Image (cartoon, rainbow, N blue to C red; front, side):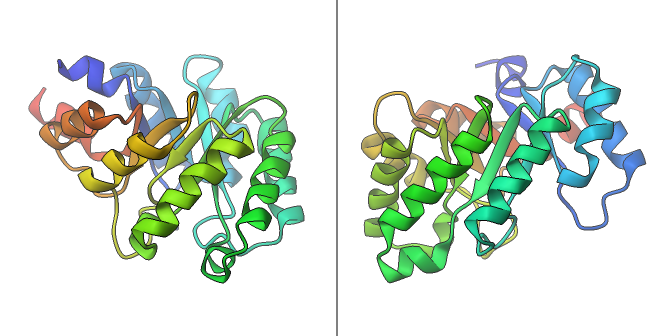
Length: 217
């Protein structure tokens, strides 16, 4: 798999608390130059980013981020506002406390509500695999499949761990038809990226691959 093929699957990401507009603009420039799938940025920059990208690069943002314990109403408001501001993709964090409570129907209902608030835009569901048992991950594959979301995503990148090969293989085995997979968190080189894609990931959340390409170019 060549590097451009891999880069075309990357959500080029900057979600640091200290991210500035100058850095976001540079992220967009690099994403356009290297033809990534999208840029994934904080919600507060979506409107400016969408105007700056001007159709040249899809804008992705995050809601309920990074902990996921906001109310459903707040997450829906965040999603609607992001779409109104020009976001074409939404990555939401589930309520992990509900998972630990076994309240899977509440998790599913919330995903459905956020999906509706997205107004037809892509929805990726972050389940934060490093905090879950394999049994919880498998059940969440079923929940995300039933919810109508477009993707299941491993990680925020803000918790105790990121994507693993084992988790992508597990997702691939248990998600239903039509649900795609995003690996995110800790993807630091092209060899790992290629392996994630071979195991079944459709998207990669990372900033490192574009940086490596720039450094080597």
